[in-house]
Image (cartoon, rainbow, N blue to C red; front, side):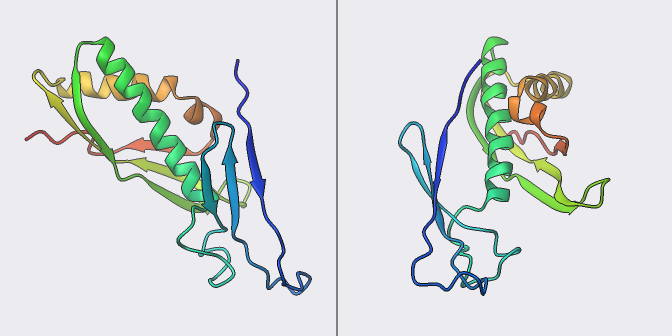
Length: 156
């Protein structure tokens, strides 16, 4: 199907390393050339050893789930003749213990605010658009965590 390549680059610098007091700051370099400054989550490793201004893997997982859902939603809505003017999602990932007792992303809540031009879908059509988007999303299909869509649309 497709191959997606990412280079993760970290260097020790001056840290002793074995005392665990080394920076978790690193960089993600994507196959298209985009560079993203990354770090461990400040909830896992406190600053200054982590950098809260950088993207952490947990945030990236939530962003990937939200982005994938949005891209499918836009495609499916267009195919159904709905014109989406704007789509903004304040997605949230919840960490907890999974059934095996391991710390995991246990829930991702998508909260898209969608603005339509002209005819907007009915509540039922909107629910169907989100269900179809979820079913098509490769990220959602790859995860065992619950992904929920809340308050999917606010119309002016």
